[in-house]
Structure formats: C-alpha cells, structure tokens
Image (tube, rainbow, N blue to C red; front, side):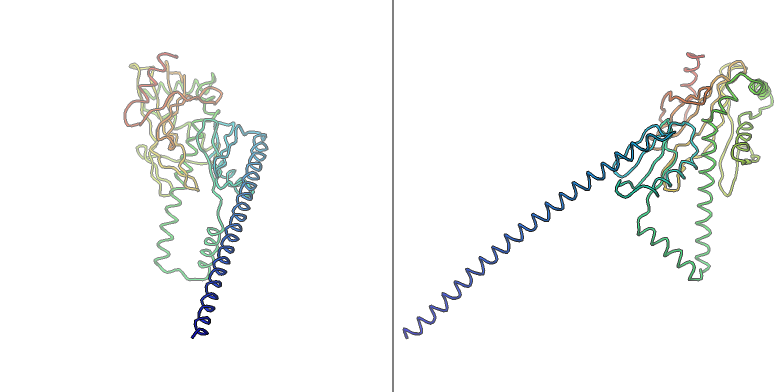
Length: 350
C-alpha cells in the first residue's frame, strides 16, 4: 500500500514539474516572440523613415531641377500630387495635358507622385494626368485582348457606339472651351482690340455699324483667330446655336449700354460648363468675353471665368500686353452682378 502511494506521489510530482517546465518554456517563447516582433517593428519603422527621407530628398531635388526650366514659375508637391505653375497666362489646355502626361510617365516612383496638375500664372488649372497602376494597365490590356479574341454582340456594338459618341461629345466640348479660353487670354487678341492700329479703327467702325445692323464683331474676330491659330472653322450658327460632333452649345452676344449710343459693354458669351480633362478633373471655363467700348472705341477687355475648385466666377481684366489681373470674385452669374461691378469699375478708371 505504501508503495502505491509513493508511486502516485512520484507521478504527481512528475506532472507538476512538467507543467512548470512547460509554463516556463511558453513564457520564454512568448518573450522571444515579443522581442522578435519589437525588432521587426523597429526595422520596419527604420525602413519607413529611410523611405520617407529618400522620397523627400528625391522630391526636393526634382522640384529644384524643375523650377530651373524655362517657362516654369513654381513647383510644389502635396501628398501624391505634383503641382506645376507656369509663367504663361495663356496656356493651351491640349498642350498642358500632353505635358502632364509626359511628366507622369517619366517621374520615378521614389517621388511618390501619382498625379500631375499644371496651372497657368493666374492659378487656373489647364492640364493634368494620373499615373496608371498595374491593375489598370492589366485590365486595359485584358480588355483589348478580349476585344481581339471575341466577336462583339449587337448589344456590345450599341454600347460601344454610345460610349464613343459620349467621348466625342466630351472631347468636342473640351476643345471648344479650350480654344475660347485661349482666345480670351491671347496677347494677339488684346493687341487687336487695344493697341492703336488700322485694325482697331476698323473694329470701331464695325461697332458703330453694329448699333444699327446688330453685327457680332467679336464673334467674327474669334472665328478668324480659330482659323489662323488652329486651322479650325467654326461655321455659321442658327440664332447663336451651334452643333459640332453631336455637341450643342450657344455662342452669342449681348450688349449692355451705358448711354444711348457710344458707351457700352459688348459681351460674347457661351453656355459651356462642366468641362473635364482626360483624367476627369474639372477645368476653368471662360464664359464671357466682355469688351468695354467708350466713344465706339474698344477700351478694355474683361473675362468672366468660372473656377470649379472654389465654385465662383472670377472677373479678370486683360491688359494690352496680354497679361491679366483678377478684379473680384462673384458668387454666380445668374443676375447682373458682373456687369454692375464693371460699370462701377470703368466709371472710376476710364
């Protein structure tokens, strides 16, 4: 009997010792795991710091080199976006989009830049591009491959036709808006209207005639500008309504007289809105070209520009050399706020 108790006692002691050793082993393993996790976390943090330092250094060097280039006024990188402000005030939107795409294609991933936006000297966005990730590239290639290897159904044809028509309309709107914007802020335009010349005298005579015949002098000059600079023929309108490639818009004039005859604002306006670039970014839209006429002489040019980022309209004055200055912001263009402001402005400055 005593032998049995001794045996059970030894067995119990064995299990107790085993449990203690197992607990100590678990504790040792847990401590080692925590120590390893801490080492891994510290290593990851150090790598992250080094990566951020390398990215900041790459961004700094890149920005300094970019600002040295002719035509670039200022460069800054915010989060994943490279913002480039040009020295020019009259920037072709098409060219700005192409330049932005070139930058996004050549930028090293170490800069962390995924989006490039280009602004003119006045701070209006005129072009942008977004880096495509591998998934988007693969999806595009897969879509292209599937289009080659499968026969589209009639429904697919209809969908593709609708999609193509939509893109054509959006591209046409983008093109018309860009050309009108460039006309408004072109130094060539300001010279035609504001510099003393035979052309300016002819414009004055045309403005006198328009008092009786209701001619749209500014629209005619716009069409000549588009033909000369872009080899683009706008064509004729039906009561100010145009239709190009399925896109319908208005381009017409309205006159605000300051007296009975010789002093007035001649306004060429459009109803273009919601203009986006290829990346889906909304662009500023020049909606009104406003010519101040004093004694039948063109005396000042003002442009009403809608800024989608602040959702307000900027009233800008274009000077004889083609540069422009912001005069004020107005909340909307539904009333006569812009003309009321300009009436007061010209009474104080002309």
